[in-house]
Amino acid sequence: MNSNAQLHSRATGAIRLLLAVWLIFSAVRTFSDPHQAVADQGLPLGVLLPLAGLYFAVGAFLLTGFMSRVAGLVLVGLGVWQLGSFGFGLLAFVLLVVGVYLALRGGGAWAMDIYVQKMQDRARKKALSSPEST
Image (cartoon, rainbow, N blue to C red; front, side, top):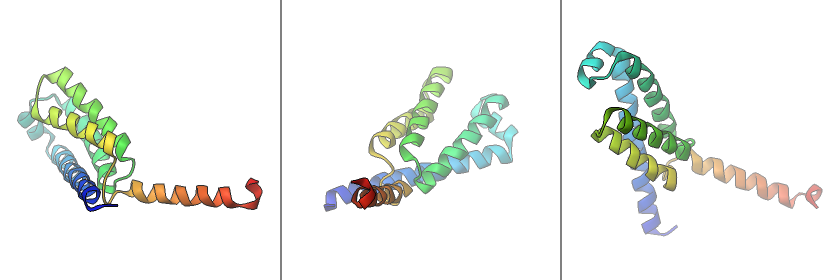
């Protein structure tokens, strides 16, 4: 991998990690004081709590880099839903843009997806080279 590709992979990994930490922090903050979160965000409690749960789950997947493309698609869905339900907001726009980016590029550097893919490639290569496959 050339240095330019490594730089893009590391940038993607850094974006993924920053968003993961922010999503988890936001979810924990909402769960720790839901009434303050309602006051801060202006959304009903019935919307905020499930949203916080989804933020936490997606953040955990992004933090580990497992199923990064799927998490990106979930972020796209969240961004579109928030834009459609609550109008334009910076958070919804960021979720949409970063979600599309991660869905297209994957998790980047330090993502578990890379190691899972390598294991699958080795298993596939081993299966193809075994005497039973001929």
